[in-house]
Length: 373
Image (cartoon, rainbow, N blue to C red; front, side):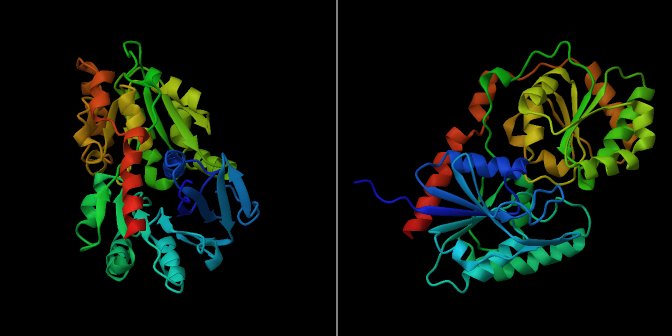
C-alpha cells in the first residue's frame, strides 16, 4: 500500500487565467512534483477588471484553485483568507513576500500545530519602482518578525538572494532560480537573417516601456534597420492607456504591438529578432530574458538583473548602467550589432541550464525534509 500523499497548499496573488512568470513557475512546480497533492489559493482577480466575479473554485489541468475575495487600491492588495482553506495543508508555500505572506502567517498563528511555511521571493516587493525606501523599510521590519515563522526562503534570482542576505538574518534560504521547460527545437536558432529589436513584458510602468520606445527612436536616427516589436500582456484598458500615454513615440517609430499572443508566435518572433531590451531595474528572475538569451538575441539588462544570469556564461548577455541615458544605450546597441557574434551552442547550454527535470529533485527534497522535521 502506497503512503498517503502530503498536501502542499500554494498561496499566490494570481493564477490562471493570469499567466505571467510567477504563474508559470507555480504551474511548473506542481506538474513536476506529482508525489504531493497540490492546491492553489489566489485572489479572485484576473487583472482585467473582473475582481471578485470569477468562480470561487476552479480546476485547471487537474490543479484545484480556490479564489478568495480581495480588495485592491493602488499598491495595496489584500484578501479574505479563510482558515479552513489552510487546514488541509501539510505544508504551505507562499509565492510572495509582501502583505500576502503576512496574511498567511497571521492566519496560521491561530492554527493548531506547526505547519511548515516556505516562501518564494519572485522580486520581493520591488517589481514596481515606486516607494523603494518605504518598501525597503517594510521588508527589513517584516523580516525580523517573520523569521521564526518561516521554514525556508527560496530566492528566485541572485538579485533577490543578495538583498535578502542583508535583511533576513538566520532564516534558512536557498537560491532557486525559476526553472524552464525549453523544447530542443527552440534552443539557439540560426540568426544570420535576424533583425530589429524585441521587448516582452506585462503592461506596467516599472518595466520601462517608455525607455524602449525612446531608445529605438535614437537607433532609427542612427540608421538602424529593422522593426521594433513589443509583445505585451494586459487587458483592453491597460492597452488603451499605454497607447494614449505613448502616442508621440508610437506615431514616430511605428512599432509592431502584439497583445497576449500564443507561445508559438512568441518563439517565432524571438528567433527573428536580433536585439532584446529589458530596462527593468528589478526582476525576481525574468523568464523573457532567459528566453531571449537561448534565442541568441543580443540581450541588454540593468546591472542588478544581470546578476540573475551572469553565472550561465551567455556570450550575448550585456548590461547597461543607465538605461535612462538612451543615446548611450543606442550607441552600445549599434556597436554590439556591428561586432561578430559567435553564439552559444545547445550542448553548452545543457551543461548549465536549470530545467524542471533537474530542479524538481531539489524542491521535492526540501519539502520532504520539512515535512519530516
